[in-house]
Image (cartoon, rainbow, N blue to C red; front, side, top):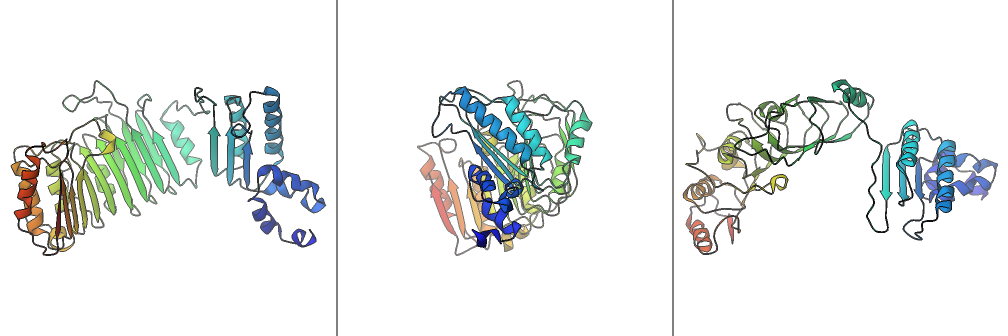
Length: 400
């Protein structure tokens, strides 16, 4: 015991952090050296036993409640790294609200709550923040100077006129609006005219999904550190957002709203997944090919966020690039197309890529129930095998 007691506080706290909270607290009885050491451990894990010995004994839960209350008051580390709760249905919103408030005072960095009901019938709503005006959420984020990850889920909530995300430290951002409004259609979309302002210079990962408010406008400043982005946007003016993500390396894209008049170049983009359910996606494809000089991987598919929307075949004609894009001549190595329908214009698109992609290694064309019919499918796919390929090493995979 003497050898352990002679270790530094930092090392002892690191050792204690690996133990269950109950055992950590009991070390206070070892000696005077240990009496208050447990109060500085940056990790707490509370379990009321609901998973191992579940019962509805309110007396037992009351003891657990008092135990947590007492420990949360006495526990005072400089920073609470992790706070975890595993609780049953006897726990209340009021209990959690109290513990969360104390955790905030303790500067908690990671909060995990696992609540279990024996029949999975009970719901549980955590304490939430109501934004009464535009300034409220700005003040909330301004009070988080080291925030690195933010998820804003607007689904099933009332539209907010303006939303500002101004966080210099932010690394990951998700803005999600997937409220399935039955009144909103592609021909007659719902227009709320919401505005979103994003200023996140340190951002590395962006997930921006708003597939119902065609009137919403996003203004965004440049994201020079951006690595990966998932953008599924219904907007009359997507140009400002697209201009801010030009540093992105991997992009999954589904746009309702034209950007064809914008002169934007994605110099770092090497991986592009383009959704085929948006109107005139083929024009967006041409635009992206012309503006992605280093593109190596191109995938045409259907995005999961709009799984109820069918992939659209090319209408009228496909406009080829004005000149062969640099990415086809020098970099494109992988081309995949799901839901290929076999119509003339789609065949022309495949032919164009195959005869100009000099570094292409793999081209995979797939036909499913949403694409080619079962009778003509194999024949139309086989027609692609005779197309000229600029790359002699290109392997053509036809999947029906």
